[in-house]
Image (cartoon, rainbow, N blue to C red):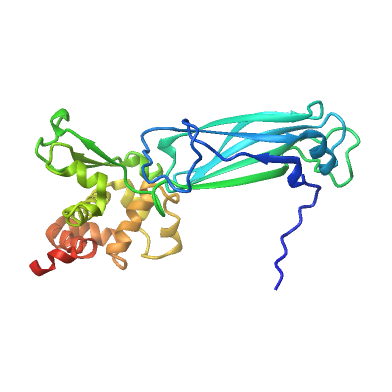
Length: 314
């Protein structure tokens, strides 16, 4: 069966009137489909070039004399909604345009899959434009979408290797330290949670760098994951604001809208519901107060799986 694409209610440019070069990094290398080494603590500068035949584009779109267009680059990920970057203007006084585009992806606001949407929008359709020309300022005449996977299928907790001897109030020989900021439960959770691994701990740097390639990685990462979930559950249940905002019947529509999507509050609530799908928040808090070891055992049973080569110990 043939598939028909919906038609726009105005004239649009043909493929021959413009072209967008591949996005490249600061070194000029073409942006790959995935960036497994993405570091949320740094920004990512990106460049490309938009080539436009202004005469052909104006004719294709039925624009009148003195038309004016604007080029925008919009960025979006699981951690942030669209961030609009104006990068240039186009008008009928130009002929062949080679517009260099430079944008900087803010690392602190990006996670998961990064969407880079390049758009040409109408500022003014000009004088005596075609009846089928786009007339409303802000109408998108053309757009191009590039997607880059920053951290696998979804955002992960940022992990930093740190020499714990340089930290205050943290045990120098601890293997890791999990820091959760609950001051703003609506903040993106990738900004509110940090996992610090002690660089001085034997093998830590290698395990973080190589992942499952290191023989001890499955056990190490399993324990770290379990501890992360335990910390998220117990700290959230000690927050009066979290309790007040999340105290709805499990699975209810009200619970689903208690916090913005991908916020630290939503991440904490999802973690609780993963381990305790049917338990009221207030009831769970009381149980944590009077039976903390039992609650932590429940968390461990749900979040930690012994790696295959250690199962003889089970």
